[in-house]
Image (cartoon, rainbow, N blue to C red):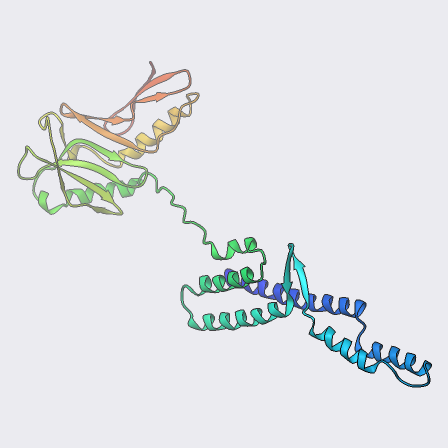
Length: 295
C-alpha cells in the first residue's frame, strides 16, 4: 500500500509538471509570439491607418499557423523534453497501470514500478528518487539466542522420549553444545552397539534423525543424561557474563557447552580473557559458580 501511495504521489507530480509545462510554454508563446486576437487587432489598426483598408491578414494567419505547428519543449537536467510527447506517454502509462491494478497479483506493485521507471527513462527523467518503491527492505536475520530455561528442559525431555532409547539409559558422548541460534548439538552412545555413537541436532523444537560419527574412547567419554540438566546452561551463561563484565576488555559469551571426560563433565567456557588479565572460571554440575580466580 505504501508503494502505491508513493506511486500516486509521483503521478500527481507528473501531472502537475505537465500542467506547469503547458502554462510555462503558453506564457512563453504569448510573450514572444502574440496570440491571434492581439495580432488581428494590431493588423486591423495598422490596415485601417494605411489607405483606409485592412492589410496583412494572410500573413498573420500564416504566421499563427506556423506558431501552432511548432513543438513545445522544456529542458530538464540539461535534456530537452517534448511536453506533448510526455503527455501522450503519460496517458499510456496510466492506462497500463490501471490494467495492472486489475490483475491483483502479488507482483503488481513491482510491475507498476517497472512501468513507471520505463516512462521516466523514455522521458529522460531521474529515477533515483524511486528506489524506495521498488526496492524491498532486506530481511534482517536476528539470532534467537540461547534457549530459555523452559525450552531447554523441553528439549531434554523430548530427547529422553526418542523411540530408539525406550526403556534404555541414554549415555551422552563427548559433548553437548548450546548455541546462540537456539540449537543444541550432541552425540549419544548407540542404543544397540555401545561401541558406536550418533550425532543429533535440536532445532525448532525437534530432534533430528541420528547420523553416525567416528567414536573413540567411548568408555571414558560417556555420561548419563539422567545426571545432567540442559536448563543449567542458562545459569552458566548468566554467571559467565556477569564475571566477564568485571574484567576490563573481556567479551561476553553467547553460547556454552559441556565436555565429558573420565565419568564426569565440565561446563565451558572455562576462562575469561581481558586486556591485561586472564581468569579461570569453573562451574558445578548444576551450573552454579565453583571457582573464579586470576591466573
